[in-house]
Amino acid sequence: MNQEIVDRFVEAWGAMGSLWGINPSVARIHALLIITERPWSLDEIGERLTISKSNASMSLKELRLWKVVRQVRQPGDRREFYTCEPDTWQMLFSIIRERKRREFDPILEQVRASRALAESEPDGIAVARLQQMEQMLVSFEKLAGRFLASGEHARSLLTFLLGRV
Image (cartoon, rainbow, N blue to C red):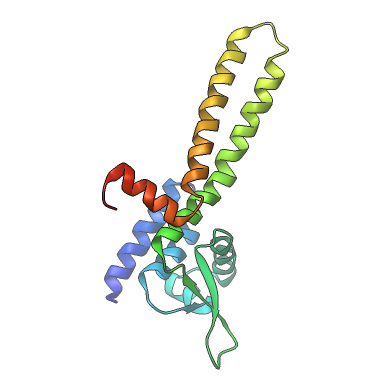
């Protein structure tokens, strides 16, 4: 792959990751693994992206938690190598699941807890607003649950909503 294309994609994905609250090194490593065909060692990643080995290691650990990067072995080599999830749909669903778990689920629990506490207060407007918010978030949770049930189910739902995907 042309190095200029790789560099442009890595920097664009890194910038996008920053906008979404993702560490730039995490996003840049992910981009490198997405756009290149071969598995990369920790040392190679650090050298290619000019980041420290410890930064690369922590970033790869995060990407593995998100289930978008896999650790692989190369025959005859004792080092660990990394490659991205080859199915972009599966990668997307893994990211959505993890963001839901980290960001959406805690706010739903906080709204529920706040509503329960507010029910003891005489001001009914707060309770009503929190109930509405909880109902809205529960609706989104159900939609996400159906969407993320399986890759096939999500693709079918998208096909239904958008036409051909």
